[in-house]
Image 1 (spheres, rainbow, N blue to C red):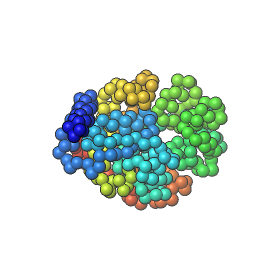
Image 2 (image 1 turned 180 degrees about the horizontal axis):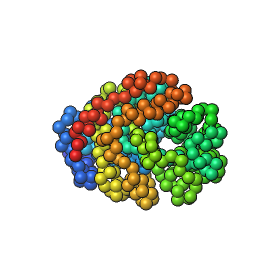
Image 3 (image 1 turned 90 degrees about the vertical axis):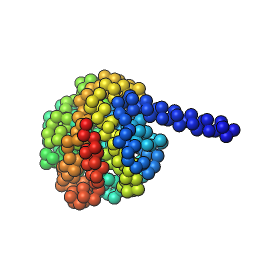
Image 4 (image 1 turned 120 degrees about the vertical axis):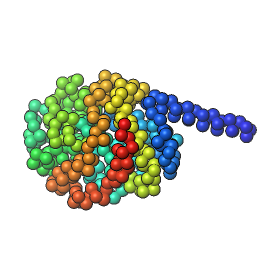
Length: 340
């Protein structure tokens, strides 16, 4: 009996190592740098399960996390609210998420740390025939999944940039989910909608609405990160090695998206994150996944925090908020290490 247990244990170990070696071969990576570091303090890590194409690095990172020493990788469903709330409440350890919607959670709780930026350019603001520009949102309706959610905060920051007060000048319709918000826009029940891949691609295919802001091309938004990496503060304090290793896996996965988007497309489709390879191909070929090497994520937080503070959507002084709720140590180390 003991021999049988030993055999099963050895077999599991072999299969785990074989899977990890297969992932390394698949992605053309090796684990020598990770092996030279202290091991992660934990083997179990939890990321947010919110499959969307712009978060591709978070899902490609699954096998790379094994190379970093994590044997139990969990993608947890959203708890109450969106990704930032799920991390802040301790249900997940870290996640990629859009940067503007981190700010209200950072403002109301001390349990988040923004630790890096990943890429820009995934969100697009659409309007109908009544909305020709951002200022035309005055008095118009915008459907959003939730107040304080991704689209609500991003549109509010965009409106504040052109002098609107999003609390007074826009009529918000809270509908519960981003797909429902898009449906409201398609049916003509709202005047504007902000989408994230694959929603903009779907709207163009349906020839619904026109683009008011494309954060991939339009300044100033194209200069800033869309998606950042945010972690639970206690998790980072308890597990600094694990934090760095998890970030390295995500940023290496971002490099895969940049270097070989077709391979990333195949992975996303094979895992069921997107069933339409042509849409996945369009998104992954266009998004600047190397942006994490070049841009300063603090600039992104400052840009949106100033807008949201001006209109009273966050109460904390932006400088104080950024100083107390960011930690760039790991990002700076990884920028030096992953030069090639």
